Amino acid sequence: MKKILLTLTTLFVAILTAIADEKIILLNEGNWQSDNGRLSYFENGRIVSNQWFRDVNGYKLGDTPNDIIQVNDNLIAMAINWSNIVQFITPEGKAVAATEDVPNNRKLASDGRYVYISSYGHECKVNGVMKYFTKGYVAKIDVNTFKVVDAVEVGYEPEGIALYKGKLFVANTGGYAFQEDHEYETTVSVIDAASMKVERNVETNTINLYGKMSQSGQYLCINSPGDYYDIPAAMLIFDCQAVIDGKTDATCFQRLEYAATYNCVNTDGKFFAIGSRYSYYTGDYTFNYISVDPVEVMATKGASGVYEKMPGTVREDIMKIQMPYGIYVNPYTGYIYATDAGEFVAAGGLYQWTPEGKFVGSYKVYINPAHFLALKPDGNGVDEITGLPKCQPDDSIYSLQGIKVSKPIEGQIYIQHGRKFIYKNQFK
Image (cartoon, rainbow, N blue to C red; front, side):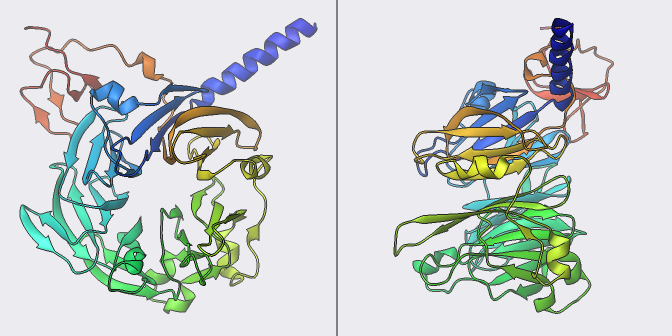
C-alpha cells in the first residue's frame, strides 16, 4: 500500500509540474561595457541554456540589456542599453529585427501594435529624420516596420514606463545630476500614446524615480533610491486612474518610507518589493522585504497596506541571498522567482518557489540576472519545436505581423494554418 501511495504521489507531482509548464526567459545584464549580456531559458525545473539567444541565432545579444517585454503572441522586445538597439525576437528566441535609432534606451511598454521605450539620449531618428532633445525622451516603434514613428521629450534620464488606458506614465529620474548641469527629477510624465503629446507632469516631490516599475491594474510601484547620501530611499504607489480623472498631484500617489529597488506584482494584485538602500557615507547596503496592497495604501493614505511578509518561506529565503537582484511572479502560474547577483562579476543564481511559497530549487545562471519574462504555457517544451511543415505552393504564408509573404526566406519564422513554423524550402 505504501508503495502504491508513493507511486500515486509521484505521479500527482509530475502532473502538477506538467500543468505548471514554467517557461521563463531571464535577461542577464552581464557587465557594463563588456558586451556580454545573455538570455537564460528556464523550463520546468531546468536551465535549458544560459546563452539561449546565441544558441538560437549564432551571435551575441549585446551590451547591458535593460528590459524585456512581450509585445504580442509572436513578438518579444528587449532594450539592449549600451548596444543602442531594441532587439526583437519570437517566443522561440529567433531574432526578427533590431531597431538602432534609440540610443541609451532604458525601459519598455507596448500595446501590441507599438513599442514605447524611454531613453536617456538626446537624439533619435524619427521617420528617417534626426530629432534632437534637451532632456530625455520616449520613442514609439511600429512593430510592422520596426521603425521609430514618433518621439516626445519628457524629463532628464527617464526610466520606468507603463501603459494604462491609452496613456503612458513615465518616471523621470534625472540620474545624471551628479555629473550634468541639472537637478534630480521629481515628476511622472503623462503622455497620450496616440498623439505622443505630454499632457501632464505629476509632481511627486520625490527625487530620482529610478528603475523598472511594476503595474497592478491602475496602480504603479515606483522606486526612489534617493541621492545615496542624505535623502533616503522611498517608494511611491501611483494611481493612474486618479491622474486620468484629473485629481490633484498630491492625491495621485502615496509615498512610503521603504525602498522598492526590485519589485513585481503578485497574482493577487499586491506588490512584492525588495528594497536596497546604499550609502556612500558607510559603503553599506541595507534591505527591506515587503508586500504592499496598493488599494489599502491609497485608501488609508499610507497608514496601512505594507506588510513584512511574503508567501511561505519566500521572504526568509530571499533574506539569505547574498545580493538580491530581481523578483518576479509568473502571471500564468503564480510561481515565484528571485535572483542573486552575488559579487556582480560571476555567475548568479535563480531561485524558485511555488505560489504558496514553498522553495523548489536554485539554478546557476549568468552575470547579473535581472529581468524576467514568462511565456504562456502551451504544453510544448523548447526541445519539441523541431518539426517543419511542408510548404505547398498554394498555401498562404504570413509574416509575424500578419502580412502575406509570397517569397519566404529560408530559416525565417512564418505563420501558416494558424501556427508558427521555421520555413524550409522543400523544392530546392
